[in-house]
Image (cartoon, rainbow, N blue to C red; front, side, top):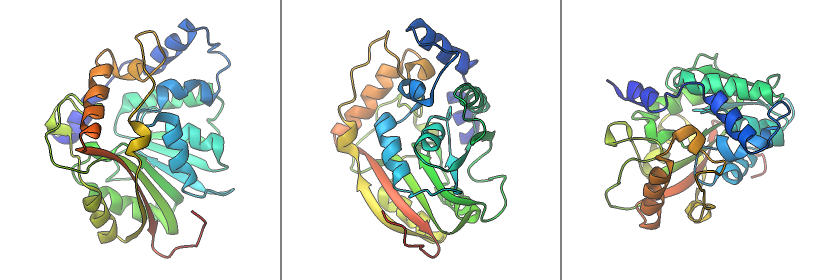
Length: 274
């Protein structure tokens, strides 16, 4: 089983949208009249949750008429949030057909299907023509990607010159062993954590300039306590979610992992404000 099959297996979950609707209904939410905001407690599957997504999206400076590519979209949380706070149209891709199916159903339920679409695709083989998108984002995806350079090359290909690419990832910032399971992997076979310097090198090699590198770890170290009855990504990850998050936080507090944001530009900058 290669790393892509391991990743697909790790994220395989039947009827994810049904699980989300059931969890919301059990807590008194009217699932027939949902907003994207109602889903934030369960669909932001990364450190820092919705606040981190909003911060990353706003770094892109999206304008009316822009199209945004979400690489590794999961169940569509960041895509929907981006469509809620910006005027952009959003296209998300993910390896997991279960995640994409849930993303489509959740997006339709909150009334955003006209502006947000999701497709099954690998980041290293994007099914889009050259220079189609005005911006791209990748949020907590690279930890599952062995060949990041290939993915970055494809993102560069589909972006218009001057477009921005924001990356927010768990990166290796110090020495030390990782304890598994992690949120993104059961073991090291599908875990490919790398340093900010490696990410920067890959980006530059395929034609990006790296405009900013920001360690956002401090904003992720004290997540709200989540009990078994609370709405949280536990709905997606299952009962071992607490152990996975605890291992991630332990590595971050020990200085082994960091939540790092990179902002890159494809080709010639168009001088948007940061």
